[in-house]
Length: 287
Image (cartoon, rainbow, N blue to C red; front, top):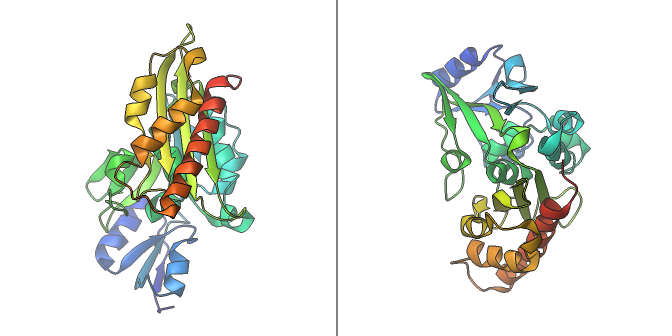
């Protein structure tokens, strides 16, 4: 590991100032679960690390006046998994408590996962699929980005060297009737080989008022199956065929992909995961 300077600001303004002063050699560190591995192998070689661990404003959860759930970027998976969340927000806790292993969940942060931008990470699919928003702190103030603006289409993120991901805002609990997340991994502590999230709101007449479907780990960024979702919107829940919808999701998401054995394997995985996520979101007891 290359030698580095470790700085511990006590406020977001100080952290942004340090990043600006030491650019382009400075990197932000929170839990360090991804960055430190890269530094050990020397694929990452920052000269300065700016720690966010001592900035209280970047951790914790709160419900905004709008009903949105605001999660600080340095909130750990363990804290998320323990949070007493209601409605579809409970799925956030479930996802956080079912990834990696206990040491990673104890140290790893939701913001760190999003900034690492590894498409196999569950939080990317969760935020993209539920329509979360990301608050980014820059020297000029705060700007809010959709996941499609935060993640680069070819991988990585759009943040400037002097910007910090401050918080993630999930839609209000009333936005969805149910959210279901499914994934496949080789071992319990591995990242996902494929994942699917389905978020729905069913109206009083039993029709799909809203449906969002996201597929993760098979492309550089999570992919929204927007055409399939548009076709299903307005349908009576009882009339939805999860098997047929899962096949359409695969056709849409894998358009332009090759036909190698690996891709065929991913298609079958996504089909099975999508079918299960759809069934759980549509036919499980409502939150």
